[in-house]
Length: 175
Image (spheres, one colour):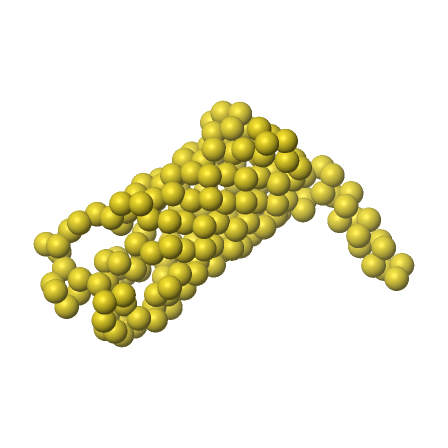
């Protein structure tokens, strides 16, 4: 019981000094799991604060496990590197101080423009200490790029891999 009390006290005291988003000059690095209907993978994100409530960044997703393709089951081996990979520029509106939420918590809707689509995301970060926290993010595609020239009819469904709703969960670090 004494150990549990000490742990909770230590966690609470470090959380007091944590701050989720501080504005211009604030930088975040996130790494986590990407979960979607046709596969799972890894996602990496870097965000840099440019204003009191605005940040820009870059994110990348690579699908490790591809289950089935949306139109037909071509098999795991058929997905090539560029089918599994996406790189995105992103914009976030960090709203926690606007909504007067706990300073350890950051709620951020945003937009992203990637190699595969244009989309939006809604994310949340919670910091336990000054440098470490957890995050979760829901990503939705809004508009898809049409590029039928580079895919045969048999390969057409491969381009859909990064055009699905997805959820990311993982760790976030202040840099």
